[in-house]
Amino acid sequence: MTLPHFIYHPDPVGSGSVQPSCATCVSCNQARGFIYVGPVYAIDEYENCICPWCIADGSAHQRLGATFVDEESIGLDGEDTLSEAQIAEVSQRTPGFNGWQQERWFTHCDDAAEFVGKAGHAELLELGPAAIAAVQDSTGLEDGPQWQAFFNVLDKDHGPTAYLFKCRHCATLGAYQDSH
Image (cartoon, rainbow, N blue to C red; front, side):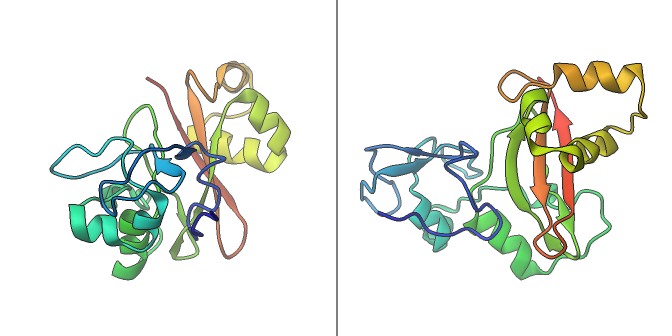
């Protein structure tokens, strides 16, 4: 079964937010082969029990009152103006991701960006100079020993971790980082 397409999170399996599973979705009562394992904001607990299809079509939000990205975390820099429809698409119909602390969603060109994924030192080296520069810019650290020490300890799985995004319009990379 082909996963639904998410414009703001194009590879939720690759990012680790959706995983193969035989679990039954609490929203549609179907076992479709994949389950969402990211954050769920709702009155009730819905851990690892909502399928990507119910996120994509908005039915998990309608039936369960669930959102998957905290609306307040979208565009924290305040430079971009997003419409209510854009915010609803990200928060209600897009898989979120697990961070160490409060997640943030990068915006650019007056739109939410695509979530690329988590990255540590090795992944950033593989992704190249633009990704490294986006993370360095988000830290406020200049080139030098402090930046190099921070860059060297970035770790995708154990923190501190970088979270990368790509603008849907101009391909500018954005990032933030956190640790536990």
